[in-house]
Amino acid sequence: MDEYIQESLALGFIWPSTSLAGAGFFFVGKKDCGLCPCIDYQGLNKISIKDRYPLPLMTSAFKTVQQASIFTKLNLHIAYNLVRIQEGDEWKTAFITPSGHYEYLVMPFGLMNAPTVFQRYINEVLREALNRYVFIYLDDILIYSQTADEHVTHVGWVLQLLLENHLFVKLEKSMFHA
Image (cartoon, rainbow, N blue to C red; front, side, top):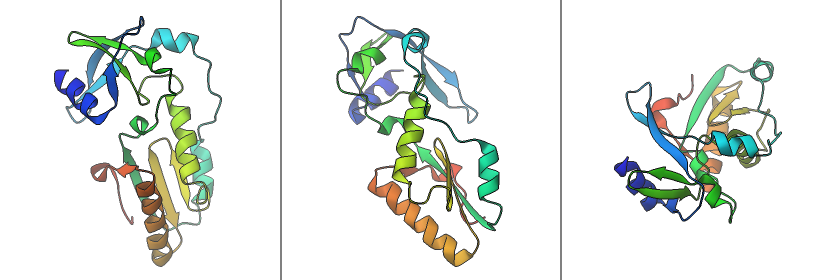
């Protein structure tokens, strides 16, 4: 926990809090035997206004990729942590640990509206290619093409846009030119 707090402070993801709010903080195991930090935002989520931005349906992905023969799947690294919490609302994300009281400056995982806020953001970043040769579901991006030459161009364009927007790919969870 101390390692997570120190790393998050150094990255500018969190800062010390004086908020009267404070959710519980704990870790859960991941498939890769690592630990995932979890904050109990049930109370905050109950009083939040639900963001109605739609997440894409998987059935729509099947329709858009039917003519494709080559695919690349990208998984974004620390995606939600790239969306800044609205200034003045940081106190709502406060959490308590044995080593102190902190609040997020970036979108933490666990907030009810985090998925829709991130989906809106990534759709805007890749808007020009969306449903033409890119399908996005949260932090997973599928690039699809009919030819290998076309695919190299598509993948290069998507990677360039991601880099320009400070979005980074997790190589170990990505697959290229399948």
